[in-house]
Length: 598
Image (cartoon, rainbow, N blue to C red):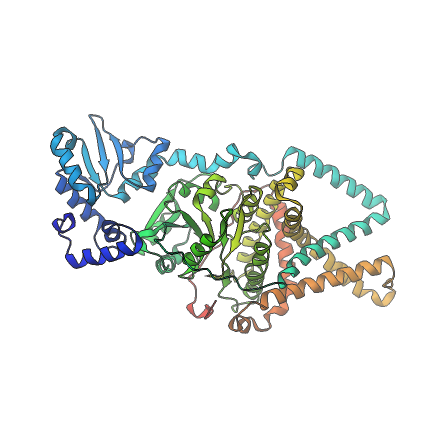
């Protein structure tokens, strides 16, 4: 047997054979994926057996950067190296085909002189570098060139700007000259506020637990795990540990840690954590826009999996999350190409900001999104723990590199193209920003991205209505447009109520009058929005989560004013820095803050 002749012991081979039978792989794949043999030593031994040179690294300048080269990122087999004097063929041989290859070389002695053996990682590294410029261009301009209507590269089209200008001028003129228009405008905003709140209230109806799916029998597919990192030295070791605990065969995992090429500190920290063979560090050349979706697009060309999941640097996914997603995909119709796992805030008790953040995330991921999925409505995806079918993701154009909330944008685009999203209940734990400055920077970016998404979707409203259908179109307007409008209007309504209460003793209009009716509507909107925020979050929280929050929920009015501040800040930032990605710093999680169950 070839492996025995290479000096690999029988117990090691027997263990790898057991893994191979269970996972539907080869003994060779299991030996390498589980670190039972060192890849450099193994392929050097294969080179000696073939009597050809071994290359531990490949000079990328010798590789032609043709587009078909990217196939070698998926299955490294061979690349041609163009030396000045002659061409060489670098190969990654397989043990099962070693005898046949040796016989071919014996029959054609000249072929051995033009052949070298290398490792899969060395070949992929050379291919990443050789095709970097072309791949970077595709990741930045691909969506804009192929489906311009979906791209946020142009923030506001000329038609949108003209219509917005006309509407703004008309409203301003009428508001000054017509006394009754202000009341009608007030009423319209209040009703939109109420509609955005109503769709969230519907999440209280229906079942709250997701169905449990059994993993289909047979071998598991390759699953790609992708994490975009930038200036994440502090959480590098935590991330490697969390991903290393995923309950999926190492030989069927393709974990890509996507870093900016000039972020040397993060790359060094990742290497220092000594990730296993299933990990690959992908270095993205520096270019604008410097955004997470651009980095994900760049790495997508090398994704080897049938499915892909995106995590953030600070995430700690449940070890069984990939299995839960695979089982749900298998039980879902083909048009379901994306599944959202819930994000659970594990530091909810640290401050009043994190407590409100935890309530917000509990309501969104454990109440609202499951309700939308149940009724097959569009989902504004979260920025992490999205599980997708790779082939469909590529067909849809990947992520928009110019949208700073690429998750919400992708969820809406998938719906427009006829696909559907679902949810699973296997959680991902992460920490919320604990300080005002960090929270405000992050939330400003989110609002800027939601504005981008709404503007992109509304370039052709009638076409959008035809593609989505009336129910989904209305849901989109209430979810995204209503959320934006209510955030902008909240301080205004808050001040109106405060003013009304202040001079109520001096003859405020009666409830039967128009002003009184608006006052009642505003008060109902305000109190109901606060109540729903608390109820939706607390009803699905574990007892331990509620205990940590304690009485910090009383700061909800202040938290909502902060949300409005972020929305207005995003509105003023959008024309000047539309693609600026304000980085959220992360620190290692405190293990004691993690909920006991999910």
